[in-house]
Figure 1 (tube, rainbow, N blue to C red):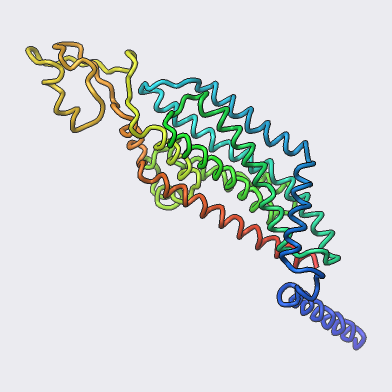
Figure 2 (figure 1 turned 180 degrees about the vertical axis):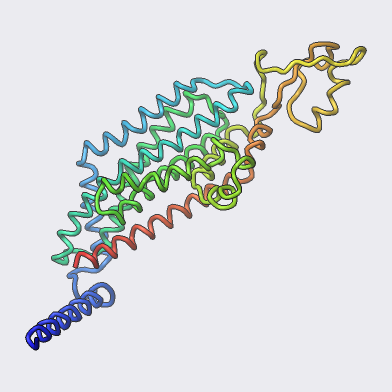
Length: 350
């Protein structure tokens, strides 16, 4: 009928005006909508968010307890590792568990992000502040508290396990773990930014964490991976860059002293010592002969330095700082994605 067509035309005109107003408010018209500048909004909202974080005792206590309990649990599981051949693998697994802890950080930060986004959805309808102020505040006010908690993890974990005691190696482990903790936090927020609630977030998390953890090179070495995974997914795993940096940092230049039960025994030909029989082969391969001057029951250790162990995983000490920088790249991407999703969320709320 004519009346129906008239009503539909009026609805379409109103929607067009709404979209036009939304576009103007979202971009060039922001300064006209808000009473204060973007920088002032960011400053004020960040201060408020910091105060909220400080007063949220339950959230901060959980954050610290998670780091300390996991550090002590893993640390005493691999307590005071020696320089034996088997302990090389134990060092790898201890560092691998530090990466797995990142999954717990991802899960724990999402409910708080979603709760604050609900408050933002309520307050943005009155144009109290813009999406930029909320995005900067919700992302960066988490960092100081995360750094403190991650520092406690390093203190409780590093010397309990007995990792490399050189000062530069301790420093690299510390800053790498801090950056990895910030990456885990940023990934958790990035996932939460495009899901409606924490239940959906818990269902989506394994898609991003399970595969990247499994193909980081620890559970399946790069050389043994299916071509489909080694060609691209291995290189997209942030856990690979983190763990390679930690392991090569710890094992580089460390001498391996095999325990008696770790030595392989073989017999040389008569009238030949162990060194005469296998010395040339050992020089071109890996490891060392424990009793080179004996003429029987030669004892062979498969590794002489830690570098030989992590080469079997296709890792290199020269990649440490490259990997450190790549982690920053992952963080930057997560932050940009989170801010984009917050911007889209504001438009949809209109």
